[in-house]
Image (cartoon, rainbow, N blue to C red; front, top):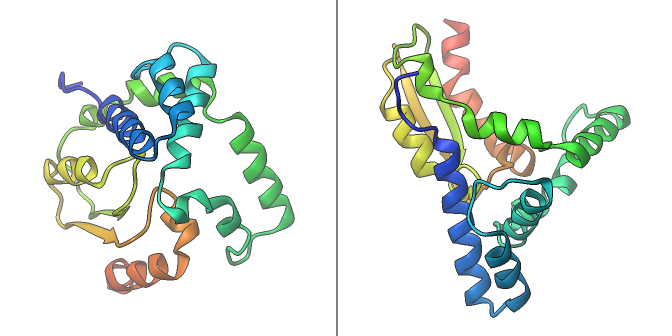
Length: 179
């Protein structure tokens, strides 16, 4: 890699601070105590990881709190797809996947891309903050690059605002595909 630190730990630190601040503001003593007990990320066991994501989930935007319900209405989704979706949520992130995410170094891919690069990002995402995604995109060189904010959406924007996402795909990607 280039020696740059991965954005994943920074994103998690921001998420931890966000959840702690929101729990304090809500006078949610139980959540504050749980977060203080596990301490800030990175976490060294699955129990701490689960506690973090569950607590963060309680304070994410409404659409993210209801994300699994949003998946139920995705076009062309079969019952088998739904079964696998929920089965996946039951086991991810595993401890191994968690550490792979933490050690992912996007800068190791280099800053130069020969294809257009688009980031479609929920503006209320507390798991992958838009500011970090935008900073990373700004560091890249590509024939065309664009940060497309999905206003009012969170981390699960593709499921929770599928119409908005599809509209943005049509506006930004389709013109490239037909050329």
